[in-house]
Length: 110
Length: 113
Image 1 (tube, rainbow over the protein chains, first blue to last red):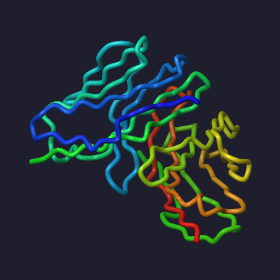
Image 2 (tube, one colour; image 1 turned 60 degrees about the horizontal axis):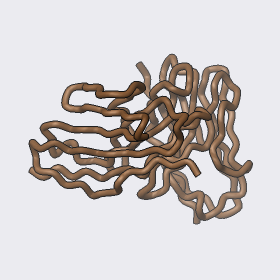
Image 3 (cartoon, helix red, strand yellow; image 1 turned 90 degrees about the vertical axis):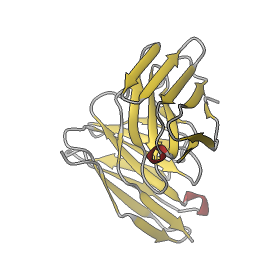
Image 4 (tube, chains in turn cyan, red; image 1 turned 180 degrees about the horizontal axis):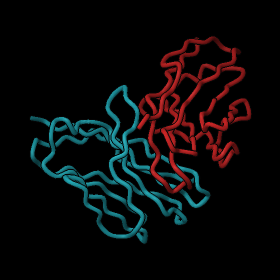
């Protein structure tokens, strides 16, 4: 059974801190990886995409990919209360299906 | 640029009924994917349409079916509704291949009584 695993949280960080969100996947054929943010009652919103090993930075967000370890992470610097949401890791598997993790709920406390 | 739109926003049905959900893709996008999201879970892939052809299917029974129209809008049909079909149904569109980021609509909340 192919899986995308995330800690469900909740993850709580103080305002201004770095939030670290982790995701592991089981399909070694996966080539494309995405992080989505989902506010309660809303639809997922794309934050980052990453396709190659290493780091990719976009503003306060950094995605990290390690295909050998089958691990992808998202760092949020200078966390703000508005970052409080559920963060979904999504993987395009070798058969081209997109598989989501269950999400990690992040709370940023003022 | 017009985003992904879904209709209706909410729907209540009873067991055994049939339902059709609709999605208009983002302007310029030719690929539409459908997902089911139960409360507290991540979206589960139902199927994807690319240029009016089914381009992948998740682990859902045949009573979940769909189609895509020449203007790239799409429908999701569910027959013989079951209580477990109660969920948020999300449509996402993208341009080109399956490795492209997908952009989601606001979803249809389906409740089965």
